[in-house]
Image 1: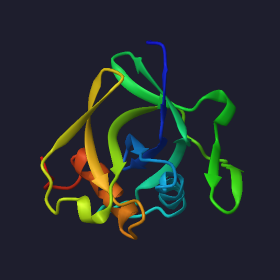
Image 2: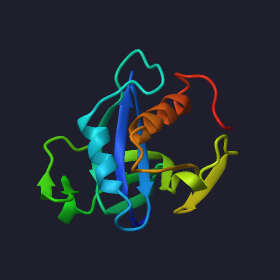
Image 3: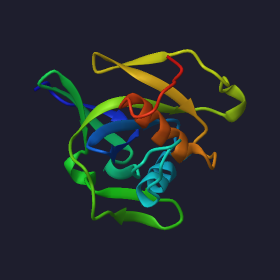
Image 4: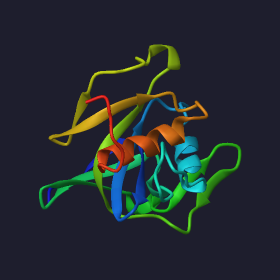
Length: 164
């Protein structure tokens, strides 16, 4: 195992039909990372046609530890903030169900809707020496949770078509 690298972001684990994926949400402070994580945790959904709901679990909010574990990039929470989620207007909330650690499989970066291509080409991002798929989403969009669930379903091969 490599020494963990601490990065800014919020990580959730999505789970459906025996598949689990770590999803890193990145963006400047105030772009809605924690709010989007809460929506994914609170509202299981079907993406664009899953037969089973895709459920979300908190891995870490605001800071994420990345480490190479047996050849996979894993994400976990620093001990001091494990299980904690900032809920704007409410404060810091301890969640009962968190998921530690998780294999990180994709990165979702915040972008303003006007700056997102309708049919983007595939993009990757380098994190801790690994290349991961990168997708851009407007975190404030009502469809953002469904978009992320759909990306996970495509990643798992449970839905066809993608931007790759």
